[in-house]
Length: 183
Image 1 (cartoon, one colour):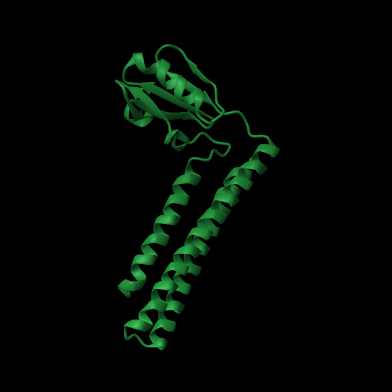
Image 2 (tube, helix red, strand yellow; image 1 turned 90 degrees about the vertical axis):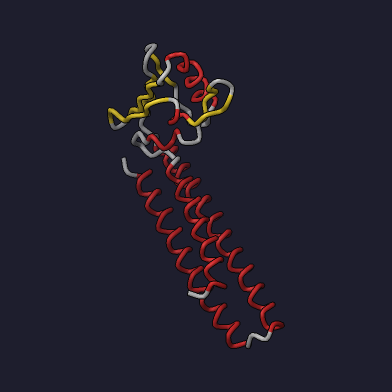
């Protein structure tokens, strides 16, 4: 592959990766430990990802269990979960925190799907912006003794790469939407 196209494809790949990472944190009806990925806990004065200070397990389909390695962290973890946008109430028994996921209402599912589609649209816009930057860079090449035919060829190749990533974004959005709507 042409390295002039490769760098733009890498940017598109990162955009897709970012979207997928974001979609993983959106909760469907089942308990998914990845929704805790963005949560940090104050650990001896520094914000630390929850997974680095506790054992996170899914004992049941709609429950996440968090077992801190130090019992002194329970209050901090509870506070971090309450102040996050998860909308969950942690229950703790002094040793373990349990997050019980209520069944999503039809309305909430539709809201989540709308949110997923919005994120997908934003990712597609980002991919198209990368294509635009690539095309602008290719047009400048005509000033550097690159034939117009070669520039057209590069533009066609970047369009194919763009189409590929837009399809992958659509597929990721579709998959997550189905997951959310499945009761």
